Length: 315
Image (cartoon, rainbow, N blue to C red; front, top):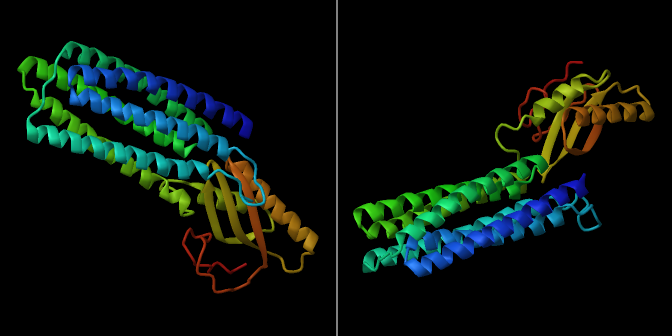
């Protein structure tokens, strides 16, 4: 599983680096040659995409490593850490572009030559970025990688950026209003900054041992446990996600007269039921209690889907 995941991620990263490198070179040179701030901003954004693709490549290689003494849970959170780095790089690029665009607006230095070249390059970029977006997002969903999804989100923004440059350049050509180019450069920089903040926020759930809104894993766990005969009141359930893996902790109640061997057998059945119903469950830790046990437990999710309330004791 890890080898296949690493192989898919490696190929996706290589294609991302190659595609963005080609676009970055074309757009940056076009920006310097024509004086277009908008296409130059787009080129700088593509340059940061090269870095993000390389970071994605490195992080997926690290996350595929097996657990060791220093990382007993594995290395999957390398994806989330890499996503933070990606967001910071994108933010820095956006901020630099914003300052340059504002400077051009106030100094009135906007002057674009050879608009036809800018239009052609922006059109090529729009089409290429669309295919890169679709490709990166398909990989992110296939291997459940937050850093690939973050990279795909950035590609999606790049489509909007290139289309804005394309439309703006056509408008400049029709109206002759050169200042529009600098305004587009500023708008592009704001979009870049906005995406960086969204990517940064997206990974907070995983790094803080939380789950994204809409994740149905708790309902799946309770429904799985309900099918195991002899097991009652699943509570103090806690789930955290590391990369694409779920780690589950829960308490269950069983007949207090059971032997340790039989209680252990029920715990293994609970584990098997959860893993059967929920894909990518890496580990299930089951704590056994005697039926009717009452403790002051103010954390974890109980069978009523409420936090920190273990009140279902009527067995």
